[in-house]
Image 1 (cartoon, rainbow, N blue to C red):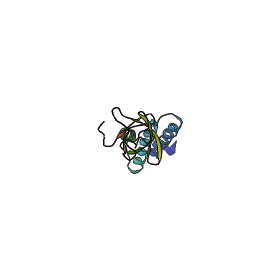
Image 2: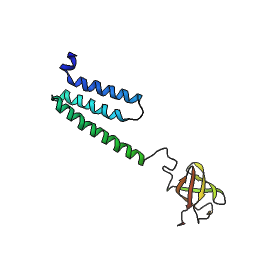
Image 3: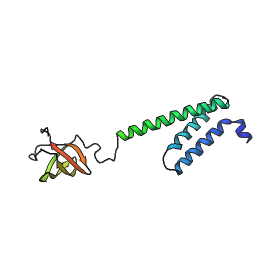
Image 4: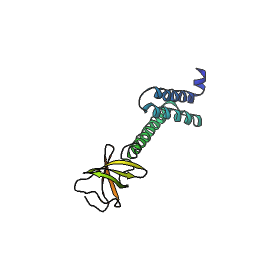
Length: 149
C-alpha cells in the first residue's frame, strides 16, 4: 500500500489496465475507453503532481474525450462498411452475360453476379455496359448506362 501512496499514478495505471482487461471479457467496447482515460490520467500524474480532486477532473475530461473519440470512430466506420453486400459496388460498371426476363447474370470485375433490371429498363446488347444502382440481398440492381430509368 505504501507503493500506491508514494506513486498515485500507479493506482490509475492499474485501474486502467484492469478496466481494459475486464473489457475483453464483457460484450461491447465501453470499458476500453474508460480504461484508456485512467491510463492517460496515470501518465499525466507521472509528469505533473495533482491533488485528488484535480485528478478526478482530469479523469472525467479524458473519459469524455475518449468516449467522444470512440463514438466518432464508430460513426465513420458505419459509413465505410467493408463487408456489406453493396459496399463499393454501387456506381460500378457491369456487362451482360445472359438474361431471361428482368433477371440475368452480369460480369462485374472478375466475378459473375445475379442481376435484375430496374423497372422500365430493357437489357442492352452485350457491348453496352450496365450501371449498378443498388443491391437486393446479393442481387445487383442494374440499368443500362445510357438509360435514365
